Image (tube, rainbow, N blue to C red; front, side, top):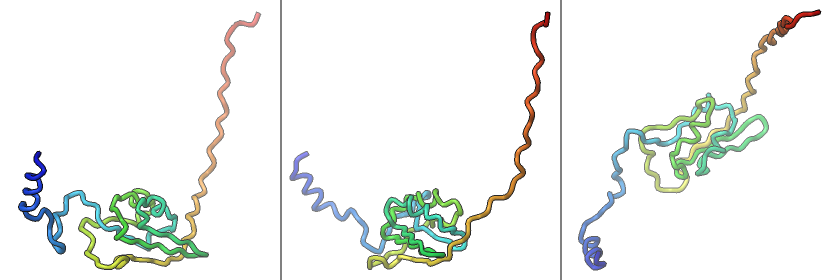
Length: 140
């Protein structure tokens, strides 16, 4: 393609983007902003390890921990939700709100650590004696 023709089309073709407050239409399978339910969180920090964008911070202290989430760093991949065994994390289906300063949407929770769930005492399995096999062959 002739470079001058391409430049002419780009200069006089009009804008290709939307102005700032407008947003594109959200698709059906969009994964949005992460929501945290502190009542369900056990403090395992798996979400922090699974977050490739480092949007989730987890700081453990003695008897408590701090969980923080910054949507400005989030890529909305959903890996943190897949790793959460207690279902304390979910995602909204709408776009996150518009923000103008770094860290404006960051949320932080300081929670007391819950004791680990004690396994239920199950009865030991019954030992089954091996069945005796009849001898094959004749004794002479």
